[in-house]
Length: 279
Image (cartoon, rainbow, N blue to C red; front, side):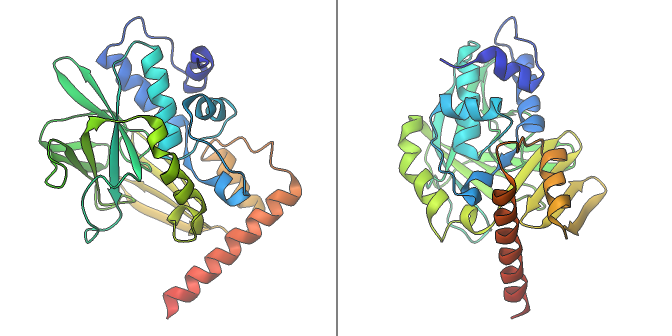
């Protein structure tokens, strides 16, 4: 069981009278705008699980997570509200050269409504703002253009392609249903391996109707119809103000020594990145 009313209060959405497409769109928009994609606990050295109840509790405490947390929690909420939700093994490709396919590093959701099936995904690092129909075509949401097509790497599955200004290139997902627990081993790898991008760079994303806010290490970007604005954050105070003000993160459980250590880690990682860029 999850605290549905508490979750809806975080989203600022009234309990729907019925599981309609209109209500699904409102719930999806609210989660994309209010619950950040973020990897803070990895860099604080605080291991997390991916059980739906635990992830919902994180959201109620003013935190977010990445796809296993966000979509796992959202699937539990939608199910409690009467939606028929299917969890899918998926894979995100960061560059055009990356192999296509549902590698298992992402959890995608689909929901059947109004005679067709919809991609529901609040864990795609600032990507879709509302659900997308599983129908081949091009879709515009705010300043971003997305594509939906049949996956050639996953028979019966689908391939979502991101706007070139996004955090990744594409995502494939397999057609069959899976259990949330099937992602446990991949979650451990993504959150602990030195090869994982989540471990190398602290990140946070939020999507809204007009664009997306992106924090990677010390670099803050705003991507919207006007282009991309970027700045490097120079102080710990400013950086923590961004986490709480832009990304709505509740950091009351992070004391002063932990904040200092985290900022030092972010500064060192940024320096290493700058050094690598000059080579």
